[in-house]
Length: 85
Image (tube, rainbow, N blue to C red):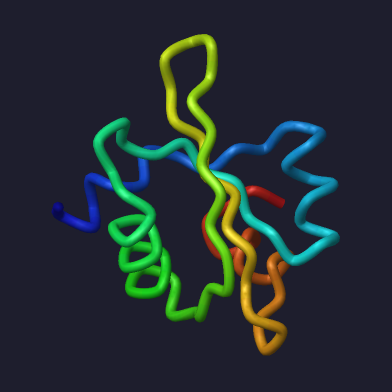
């Protein structure tokens, strides 16, 4: 799957903001994307390493991904790169 089509957009809600304190980023991703696709897209697009990816299918029919970053990276800094902050 094309890495530019895997990530639809980053989430900026209250819960996503709280998760950034735990070094996690939250994105809406393509419904057909696997965890491996998501990991590859995040690591390639943002030049980071991930340690865990959790996906959730929402009642709206979207797929949400919580991405835990390696300790060497800061979720707040990465979020500022794509304009969340």
